Image 1: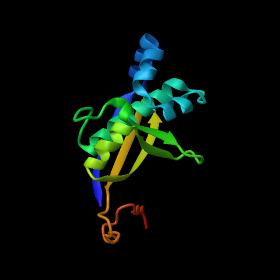
Image 2: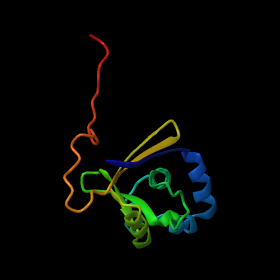
Image 3: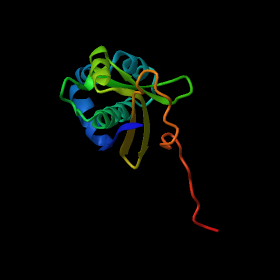
Length: 149
């Protein structure tokens, strides 16, 4: 069952201005250690930072906390797995809030176009211990319907 859905849209130029002005201070304020390691391997650091900022906003919106109620910007994040799929990660403090809210797995998708970054996060409710999976919700199912004959 879905716990929450969050979305964020931002202009890359906004992040570029902050990064140019504050540099390393901005990076250390924004990124979890796992994200920082991936930043070091990217060819487009401003795009990377913009996508991480948008993802963090979308995740905390899905949690329903925003950056308050014990959640700071470095308490949630996104790292790419070996296939490049973005995965939601939490700091120790973020994991405590997540667990208190009974949030389970998280999913995030990121895209950019024409100077904009969009992030969508879907957080699932953690199943009660011993509960059967909820097969009837359709969660995780995506169907594309082509209206043309």
